[in-house]
Image 1 (cartoon, helix red, strand yellow):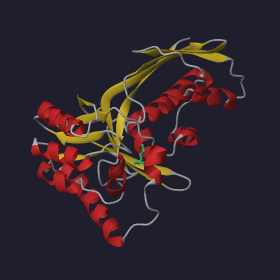
Image 2 (cartoon, protein in one colour):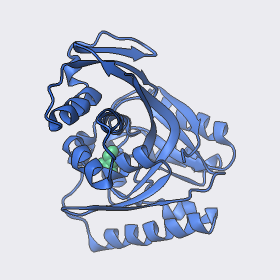
Image 3 (cartoon, helix red, strand yellow):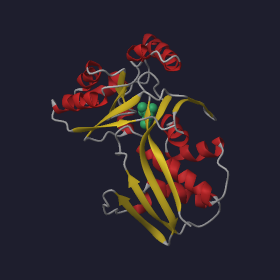
Image 4 (tube, helix red, strand yellow):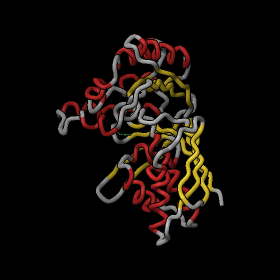
Length: 290
Ligand code: HSE
């Protein structure tokens, strides 16, 4: 039996909502899998030789779920279409985890509850702000306690598109978290609290003029921007060319601009700003996956 799932890219944080906000975008990874003796992976668009297919995250998740059912995992043949670049802050690993969970639960004919989802997903990655929009689509606000994750999905204005500017260097989330301080000044916490609360209202009331100020952040970007050459200039170029808001996508290295027009102009100017520091980047104009 062949199981096929498609999971969207996600952009976490959206500026002030560090570890809280996540948005699904119309760029997808696809996973098509069937039972097989041994593990085989075909990867598109470019089919590179994969040395240790057992280390593939999707395979690890389905193997885990198979063994959790008390069965022996004999293997699988996976055809994956990878459209989301890895280690760029676009939730590529969340797609593999979510796809693995959806596949495993479909194969074992078990209903997937929130509790079951998080129990498995958090074994592989601790970020609900990527996992949830990858699973549910749309714009998600998430809150994770020791034993439970609470969340809400909210309508995101359809006329807003995301211009994602993807530089040609990878940045692991682990590395991008290591540069963060363990404590922040109270005034910086207030700075983000005010902005993240008003960000939600700006979306609900379609007050797009607020997006620039509410997408500022003092909890992660000031530290992470040292890992992204010309970060300030790329953000500035987005605003100069008509972006409503701009921020680091997840832990980076992608930079995201939100806009209702001038998408190509914004994307090109941001690519140009990366070029000033000899970094090649490409941009994509994406919609919100609902
Ligand atoms: N909120 C997380 C971070 C997302 O910014 O580190 C990781 O993908």
